[in-house]
Length: 241
Image (cartoon, helix red, strand yellow):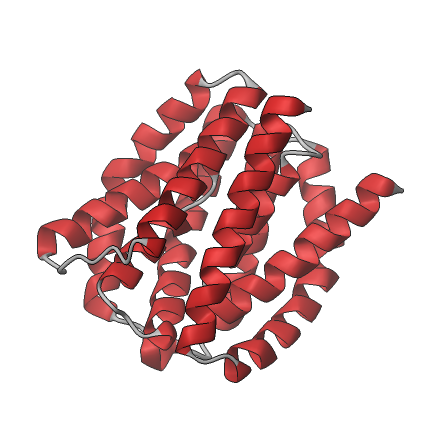
């Protein structure tokens, strides 16, 4: 019963975050799903549910999508996907896997707190897409490089959310297919994903309300809190438990 409660809480809260921020599901769900599932199962559940969320939201927010930037992300990600699956296939220690994810989140948080700023260039657009593709197939988290890049370039929250969700439609689908091809899947992955759909639907509704309520400043603070909490918790759990 404890595992069921934890699973329900993870999916519900992560769905709200994904809808309200555009990046929260994978950042929130992947670290905590690792407490309940093996890495390949946690990543595949994350990919399936994130893909469903993107499908449900992208049409409504399509007017805010930066189409030209999204195309560059997609092109760059094609080079990152095979690198990511190679990294995933070579990591066989769950503790190491968790530590890598937690350090990545904490490093991202530090850069954001230091008011990291960067100027957009075509090369950097492609590079961020490549890094995002690599992280999606390796740890199921395309959001960190996108979040850092958008924040560093001062992108408005509406464009951030819409463009990342549109990009996710492509990268999650490609990454899921790659995962299934190279590492296979389990019945538990699909059963757990099916059970989670009602929670995702409810989270979508509440997340949309939250998005309309929060302003840019609150959005930024919320981002810092989410990243730091998730990274610190996962690091402590990996080292001491």
